[in-house]
Structures are given as structure tokens and as C-alpha cells.
Image (cartoon, rainbow, N blue to C red; front, side, top):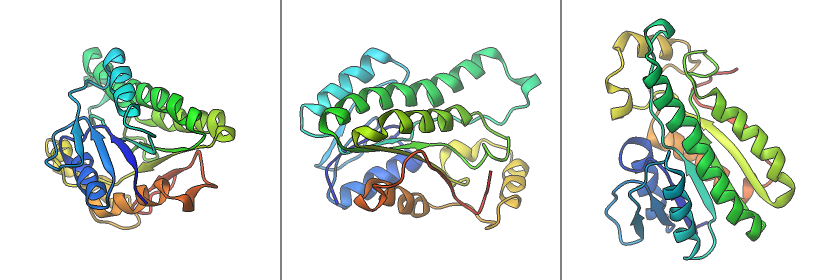
Length: 221
């Protein structure tokens, strides 16, 4: 399968690896991040900037159908509540939730006209372990799945285990090890582990699945 795919947060880590994965598989990828490939188009977009998101999605739609969206952009924080400044909490919610909402909303407008499309939001196994703030993204996934299910869209989410990227390198080692210790499969995730799930969610094989949250590593809510 191939087509036109938007990937947010493609400048590094999981997003960059997924962009390279789908470019190799023959997709045309439009992303917020620099990737060197002839079938990749870079957009310098702040995912919290509504006007910029609208303009990007319209520009991608001008190239034809938007077949998939990987809503990957996010920031991480594992501070205690008492030690979390308001500005930090606002930044996390703006990127993790409102950025996902903006891209989902704008891409869904295009997909509804097409009567088909796949959206994969990114959460984390830290949500069912009560360690992260991406629960709002999971709620958004379920709400959007109900709203757009009869219109041909499938909207699901993947919750990776920690993958060794820049996003987690600043986190205390003991916290990461404690998180891994609560998984049934006690290892770091890999880019391929994530791609295995997004491959399925983007493919016709998942056309009877929507509103599902798939956690990796044997973590259960």
C-alpha cells in the first residue's frame, strides 16, 4: 500500500524513522521535519499554530488524496505535579493534545470528502500506568472515531513503550527502568515495533477497526 501520508514530528526520533520507513515503502510523505528523500516534502510548522496547520493540510490536499495521518508530534515530562510549572503544563497540552486535535480536524475534513482515510494518533504506555498526560489524546481518538466512523474514516492510536530517542534521553534512568519493569515484555521498544502497528492501521486490513488504543510491551489499561 502507498499514497500521500502526513507525519507530524518527523524531525527526529520515531517520526523521522517512520518517515524513512514509508518513503522506502513508496509513500509520498509530507512532514514537519527535515528528511532527505525525493518523495518527501518538508513543512516548517508549529503544530500548535492553527493557521499554519490549516495551510499545510490544504497544501498537501492540493497534491491529491490524503490517505493517512500519523499524529506523532509530542513532548514528554515526568515531573511530579507539585514541581510542574503552569507554563510547562500548558506547553505539553498545547503540543500533545491541541496539536493532535488541529491536525486530526483539518485532515478529517479532507478525508470526509474522500469518504476514506486512516488517522493514527500517538499516545504512550505511560498513560495506563498513570505516568503521562496523553490521556486526552486517547479520549480524542475515541470521540473522533465515533463521529467519523460512518463517513469512511478509521481513527486509532498506538502507545509505544520507551524507544531510545532524544525525547527520553533527558529522563532519569531510574524512572525509565521502573517503567520498563511494569511491562510484560521488559525491553525498550524499537522503531520497527511501532511501524508494525502503523502499517496495520494504515492498511485495508484494519478497515473494521476504529477507536482502538493499542499499547506495546504487554501493557494493559
